[in-house]
Length: 224
Image (cartoon, rainbow, N blue to C red; front, top):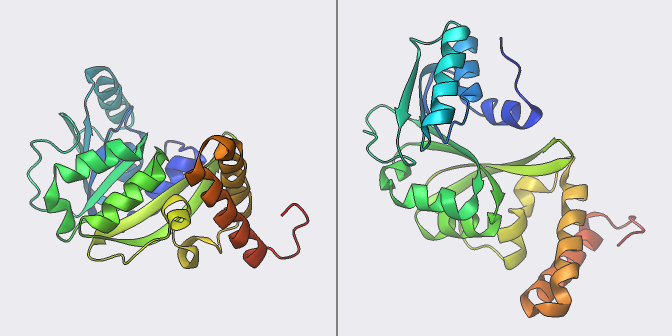
């Protein structure tokens, strides 16, 4: 069984047994190969916009003996993918704007598809897109890898309701505040907002809202 980093393992763990999975922007194909090796996924399609990483994914699949169980496709996002039968889509390691544009071009992902999304930046952009375009955010979790904390969302078609500006950045508190990494994640968000506050009224307002959240959730933290 190949080894996955903490971040990739956290993403793969959200795939339900027997799922038919598309991994968008697969890079070197570690998640699809792990899903095939472990037997978690019934079938796996790995896509990438670049031929080099896709060739690396093909080599890894052959080396690990799952070449016949991992299908590879050179394409931009989900372009040209027939949605029939695919019930899980993973999009990780990209900015929130890019993930949103991929989903916008594939509206079929609102119909009976489980989304596993891990944006590396522009997280508020992605959450806003989901909440305004017919998706429901089901869960939020955090994972730490190489000294950085990353959010992982699951979503499906439906309605998410309204989000405050801070919730667009952090996620719904009832979904994420209980995560053991939420405290340091919130501290990082506070630090970035306060650094930008002298130059941005929006950042200043966010910093204030973050501080209110911290006082409410961590009343005994002297750093507040």
